[in-house]
Amino acid sequence: MKRSCTKIRCSLDGKRAIYVDDANADVLIKYINRDSRHQKKFKHICDIILEGLRNKELYDKEDINEKCKDVTAMKLFKGQENDRIYCKEITTTKGVHVVITCELLERKKSTKLSQREINIIEKVAKYEYKIDE
Image 1 (cartoon, rainbow, N blue to C red):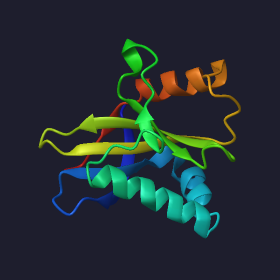
Image 2 (image 1 turned 60 degrees about the vertical axis):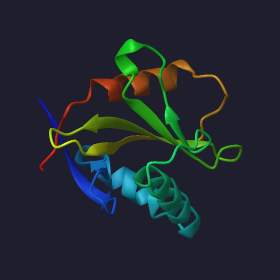
Image 3 (image 1 turned 120 degrees about the horizontal axis):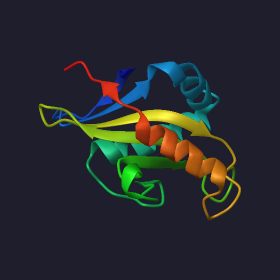
Image 4 (image 1 turned 180 degrees about the vertical axis):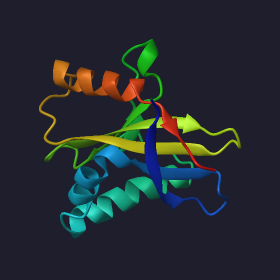
């Protein structure tokens, strides 16, 4: 069964969009709205994505194996709390590049991926979404 998601931001040209997974929206939005620091960091990462820029320090692929090639991570407060929002990237039939924020991981402990992170990444990789265009 396909999961549902809701658009939260879109690029000016309409070629890129950020969505939130409806099943996890409460947790993700509560985290983002925790304080102005979280809001600013999330907005900054979204701006980078929507402008089509790459900054591997803030947003990068979690390419751990072939089945996880569409999973990415927003890296919030790297070197501090080291939180992650794991995302799924898809392209719609109309060619819109969509980033869906799926799972929150607070306080990633090490530079290498633990089994906990691998499990989350593989879970996100299996998600399938219905995008209303």
